[in-house]
Amino acid sequence: MHALYSVSVIRQIEQAALQQVLAGTLMQRAGLATANTALALLTVAPRDASILVLAGPGNNGGDALEAAAQMAEAGANVMVRLCADPERLPADARQALLRARQTSVVFIDEVPLRRWSLVIDGLFGVGLARAIDGTAADLIRTINRLDLNVLAIDVPSGLDADHGMLIGQTALRASTTLTFIGDKPGLHTLAGREHAGTVLVDTLGIDGALYPPCALELSGPAIFRSAVRPRSHDSHKGSYGDVMVIGGADGMTGATILAARSALHAGAGKVHATFLGTVPAYDALHPELMCRSASGIDVGKAVLVTGPGLGTSAAAATLLSEVLHSGRPLVLDADALNLMSTDPALQQRIALHPAPVLLTPHPLEAARLLGCSVEHVQGDRTAAAAALASRLQAIVILKGSGSIIARPDGHMAINPSGNPALASGGTGDVLAGLCGALLAQGWPAWEAATGAAWLHGHAADVLVRDGHGPIGLTASELTLQIRREINLLKPARQDDRTGDAIPVPAQPTGRPQS
Image (cartoon, rainbow, N blue to C red; front, side):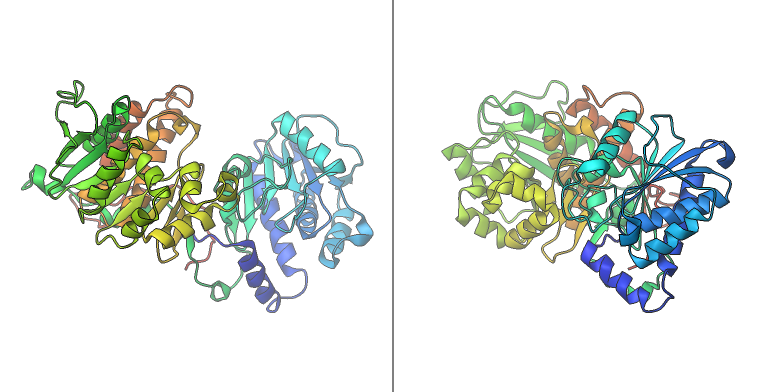
C-alpha cells in the first residue's frame, strides 16, 4: 500500500520519532535527503551548477539550510535567500544556519534573475496557515514566471497538504516534491497535481511501528490487478457479462452511445443501449450494440449503467425508480445522480440496494447530493467522497484532478492518473461504461472502481504522451485506448502462460508499509 497521511497524523508520527533520536537528527536526515535528491536532479556536475535555496522561518527553512550546507560540501555553487529573522528561527534551524555559514554557501538579499540549475523551495511547509504575502510571495511569483526546475521540500509553499487547495492566491509550482515521513493527500488531488510535480517520499528512517493504520492510499494497478483474469479458450460472450446502459432522452443519445461503446471495448460480453426517447435502429459505427426502447425493458442479468443522457423528466424519474427496484449491480452517473439529489426516497433505496452500487459524480453532482456548495466539496474532497459513500452505502468515484474513490467502510484511494485531456464532453460517460464492463466481468466493486478510474486516466496519459492531446482529445479516442490498456494488464499470478502483472508506475522507495 502507498499510504497517504494527514498532516495531523504526520505530526503525531514525528513527535513519537523525536522521542527516539537526538535533537536535530530528523532535520539532518531531511537536509541530507534533500541534498541527495537535488544533486540527482542536476543535469550538470555539481561544480558547474548554480543552485538557489529559498529558506523560510520554520523547520522547513531549517531543512533547506541543512541541504544547502550538504550541497556546498559536495562542491555545488549554492546561494541562499533567507526569508526569516535568524534570531527567531527554531533551535534546530538555527543550528542548520550555523552549519551553512561555515561552508561556501553564499547568502544573498536579492535574487538575481538568471537561469538557475535548480531552485529549492524551503519557504513554508505543512504548518502554513495563512496566505503568503510580502517578499516571499514576490519570490514565488518570480520563480513561477521563470519556469525553472524546482524542488519543493515536503510540500510546495502555499499548498494545503491535506486537501490540495491553495492557501490564498500564491503557491509555488514545483517540478519535484520531496515529502517527508509519509506521503500527503493534498499532493495528489485538486491543485496539488499542478503544483507538486513528481512526488518522492523519504521516511527519514522513522521506525515503521510508529505509523498508524491508514485509511487513505494512492491508487494504482497493485490495488486491482487481483481482479484481472486470463480469458479461457473455453469461453463465450455469456462468460463476460451483460451491460445495459439506460439513458438516451431525445437530444442526448450520444452520451448513451458513448457509455455503451466504452462497455463494449472494455470487454463486456453483450451490451444493450436503451433509450428513453427515439430509439436508433442501430449504431452505425458499432452494430454490435443492441439498441432498444427503455419502455418495459427486461434487465435480465445485466449490470445497469444508468444516467448518461437520461434527462430529469418525470419519465426519467420513473425509469430510475424501476432500475433501483431491479436488484442488479448499478453504476449511477450524470442525470441519475441529479434525480437522486432531489428525492431522499431514492437515496434511501440506494443505501438499501442488495447489489453493488458505484456512483460517479463530478463535484457539482456531489454538491447537489450533499446539499452543499461546490466550494465545500472541493475544499475537502476526501471528506465529501467519504460522506457520500457512507450515506448511500455505495462506492463513490468523486471525479476531478486526483479523483477520490471511497468505500462505505471509510477506506479511500486517490487516483494519480489522468490529465486535462479529460476535460471534454463524453469522457464521464466513458468512465461509467468502463465501470459497468468491469463489474459485468466479475471484478469486485472496489477493484472495478479503482481499476476504471486508473485505466481511464492512464489511457489519456498515454494518448497525450503520444501527441494526441491534451487539446482536442475526444471521448471516442479514449475508449479505444482503454481497450489497449486493459489488454496490457496481466493477472497478478505469475506463470509461464501469462507472465507477471504489468509494472506499477514507479513509486519512491523507503515509504512505510501498512
